[in-house]
Amino acid sequence: KAMTDVPLAIVTRNSDREFSDVINWVVHALFYGQERGLTKDSSLCKSYTKPISRATDLNFMNAVYCVGNYGDISVYGQDDSRMNHINNGTNGMLHHIPFGNMSGKDNYPGNTVTDTLLNDIREKQSLNCGVVVPDGYNGDIANGNGLVGMSVDYCRMLSAGLFDGNPDLVKLFALSESDESPFFALDNRSIDVLAGGRIEKKYDFASPPLLGGFHFSTPYYYGDEPASEDVSFFSLATRDEDDALFASFVNCIVLATIHAQKHEIGKTRSKEMPLASMFGSEFEWALRHAIHYGGSYDRLYEENFGDVAKEDRGRNSLSDSNSPRIHSFPGLSP
Image 1 (cartoon, rainbow, N blue to C red):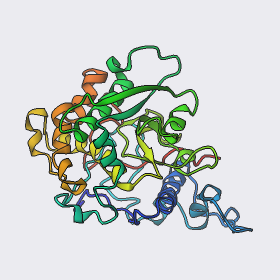
Image 2: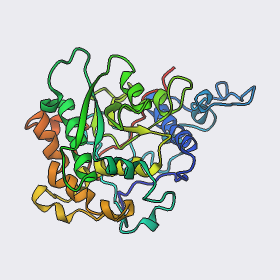
Image 3: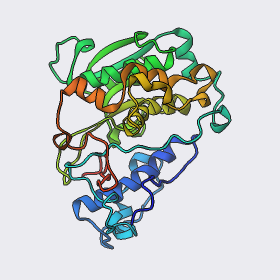
């Protein structure tokens, strides 16, 4: 019997984002191994012949070949709850993660709230939000639908959270997904955040002199690829080199829509969202403002994709206690 559905994770310090990324990709390598039927194989378990100077040079698949895949090492690999199984695209992957105590800045010891990107953006009263669009897209993104429309809504919810409920203090920039221009725009600070960015290993780590590393929020949209292939994960991306507080704030806006869905909190009940004074007293109502503007996840989905039955939404619905929730991020394939 499942006693809890709260996810367990490895915890690292905010002071070393690259190390956190390395740990995360080791875990995803274990997932990947299970998806592809790869397991412990001493002939493929290779030692490094020279010192590794960049995280991108690490062979994350050594975790599988030297130890085993997720199912091999996990006591939950064959449990009856199915939560810890690979998601094949027929069940929701949106999982409610408890916010915990967000009532004071002392709960976030890594940064002060007065000298951060979060505070800088608030002071200039403007958020620059890039929106990834399909190649050849020539519509007005402000009136877009589908994934583009959902990404725009998250940009506006960020604005509402940042600026006391005002969703209009955001400048939207359409950026084609046909090349790497969305991530170059984020890297060179033309934009503050990128909506609709695909989570991929090649963008997670810095690759100087071309790009710095990026931080990805909890995904808000999933592709319908089968479990045996790389699945598309779409999220809000921020720069690794910026303070972790801004990345955490951005992530909390995405999590807020899932929290609202879990607890059936709509726009009119937005005051039931938790306070978030850990980001500073001026952001205490940030999650309430965001939900007051955008509503819960289902509301955002229906607004942009129409009234689609839950069973036809694939991974894009709230998971239940019997839904598989695991799949690796793209970038581990040879």
